[in-house]
Length: 89
Image 1 (cartoon, rainbow, N blue to C red):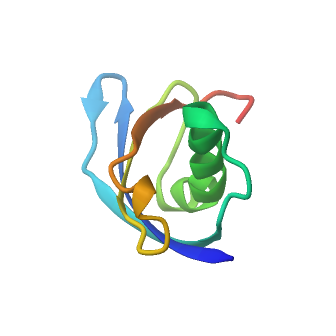
Image 2: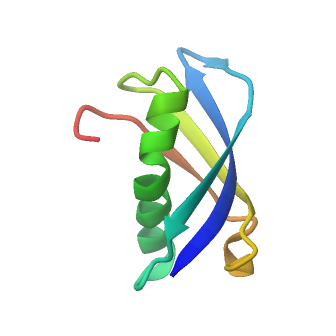
């Protein structure tokens, strides 16, 4: 099942917080998102390509993500977390 996901993304680099950008993606719904960590991992995974394409990310950048819309999964709206970009990502 595919869901329509909208998220506000803000990147902070070297103490400077950039402008907030809105990303909208149609993504596969998670079959299993165990707890907050599983949900965070799923959202980062499905948004990672869009975020990397739409922004210039580097190691150590902080990416604040807030889900602002998801008609098929309203339980996701309001979920917010920070992803710190590393070489492993």
